[in-house]
Amino acid sequence: MAKVYYNGDANEQYLQSKTVAIIGYGSQGHAHAQNLRDSGVNVIVGLRPGKSWEQAEKDGFQVCTVREAAREADIVMILLPDEKQPTVYKEEIEPELQPGNALVFAHGFNIHFNQIVPPADVDVFLVAPKGPGHLVRRTYTEGAGVPALIAVYQDVTGTAKETALAYAKAIGSARAGVLETTFKEETETDLFGEQAVLCGGLTSLVKAGFETLVEAGYQPEVAYFECLHELKLIVDLLYEGGLSWMRYSISDTAQWGDFISGPRVINDSVKAEMKKVLEDIQTGKFAKGWILENQANRPEFNAINRRENEHLIEVVGRELRSMMPFVKAKQKDVVVSSAKN
Ligand SMILES: NC(=O)C1=CN([C@@H]2O[C@H](COP(=O)(O)OP(=O)(O)OC[C@H]3O[C@@H](n4cnc5c(N)ncnc54)[C@H](OP(=O)(O)O)[C@@H]3O)[C@@H](O)[C@H]2O)C=CC1
Ligand SMILES: CC[C@](O)(C(C)=O)C(=O)O
Ligand SMILES: [Mg+2]
Ligand SMILES: [Mg+2]
Image (cartoon, rainbow, N blue to C red):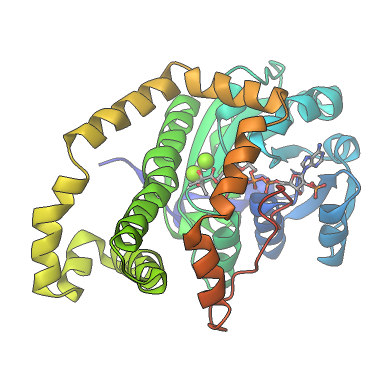
């Protein structure tokens, strides 16, 4: 078994009398900033003028430019979108780094794929929550937390790992469990998980099920409840007690269908494709494509995003959710990407 670190293994002293600059105030940024502050850490937020700046100020933070925040801080946590990090780092963060400072990430993409090359005289580590930023904040306020990975890339102070653990504790992750890894392992497994299972695999599975029912003449609303809405209720059981707890709660008829039909749908050809997806990640092919797509101003990303937002499952879902006041997610303009705080 891997060593799993919990609150008792982390010492908040490593963050005491330090200033942490949170660069970006989106999904992860707002959660890290608020959790760290609630844990007694001195936090400043680095941004460009705009929506996030206003929000962070409204939330009571001292907000300044990225360059000013990097200058003032001992620990600089970069929570900008991955594709924007290299330019902002080069222009506004690197010139302000002092020997012994710490440069921190929540995902290893830019270090692992050589888009950011840090100076040799700073600590470089990551604290990567294994969950969406909004849940990092929500679970913290509920007294719980989202597990995280830590990894050290450069350790000039000799205390990089201890500081990473203290940071993980301060955002609530050591309540749930922290694993030590490498930038390579975090980057490759995170990209694989989100593409093949958590996001890409899941949305494609849900849409395929929904389309199969609708194309067979069933009501789209029935298909929506069956293939999307109920998923949360099933996944909650997986989260609480694994596959067996979910299977205990469902009917024996459903469990028999799970055993017999699940492997027909997610079969060897799906696994073979997953292996190819992993290979594209490992070889850097996926990273190169994503970097170039951004350099070209996202023509394909935006076209797919528009088409996905117009899918019948989204149209029906918006209608049905508007009648469920207990479903609290805010409807965001997801066609044009915007700050996620
Ligand atoms: N989303 C998640 O839950 C997870 C993310 N991660 C990692 O965390 C990091 C952050 O991701 P995420 O939270 O999704 O990012 P977001 O897309 O939510 O970040 C948006 C934030 O970045 C700011 N921003 C964008 N461009 C600039 C700029 N040029 N200068 C200053 N501020 C800018 C935005 O401000 P403005 O309002 O001005 O646009 C906004 O505050 C990434 O490395 C990601 O891989 C890791 C685990 C999970
Ligand atoms: C699953 C997507 C994720 O990796 C995450 C929330 O952990 C991300 O990059 O947003
Ligand atoms: Mg992830
Ligand atoms: Mg990710």
